[in-house]
Length: 106
Image 1 (cartoon, rainbow, N blue to C red):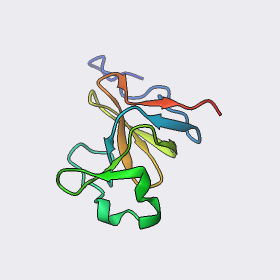
Image 2 (spheres, rainbow, N blue to C red):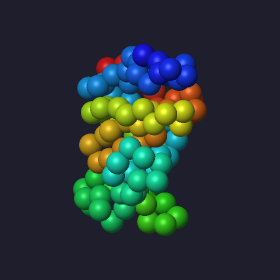
Image 3 (cartoon, rainbow, N blue to C red):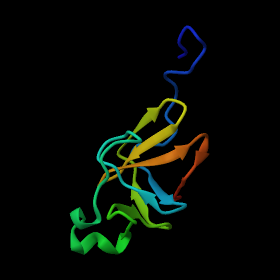
Image 4 (cartoon, helix red, strand yellow):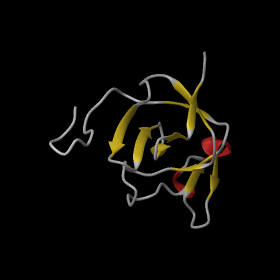
């Protein structure tokens, strides 16, 4: 679906809900699917799950490259990209048309 200017506003899902994806780089977690949304802090991650994360420069939680997690839902952020909801927060899974995650085959 496109608006009157020809900009795509709705289309098929980029990522499949319920499928597992592998992080292709360390990705910051956010509490909402917005570039300026509040970041999840590393200190907010339960100690039993911290092996999958690392602390960023300002204490934010980064999900580590190579970690696999399940897609709960997605949210398009205009031309910026596509956010993916994981168990602990949102990541920018596709940025300017480039995937930052890869689907895991079983």
